[in-house]
Image (cartoon, rainbow, N blue to C red):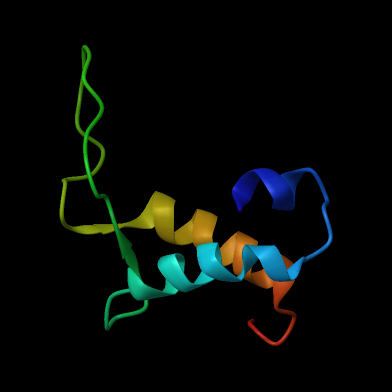
Length: 72
């Protein structure tokens, strides 16, 4: 969804399943978690797995605002 949003692709009904998956992962406090960590060298942890992620929440909200103008 982020790719399509950045590529300025108009919303298409085929995106519905992806939006449903994204919305299922939303927490009660309207944030999204960091789901996993990719392998490799890490110099410092910015966020912890399983906790609210400011980065993921920002990315999801940016996509939702693009495709659903009623979200502010």
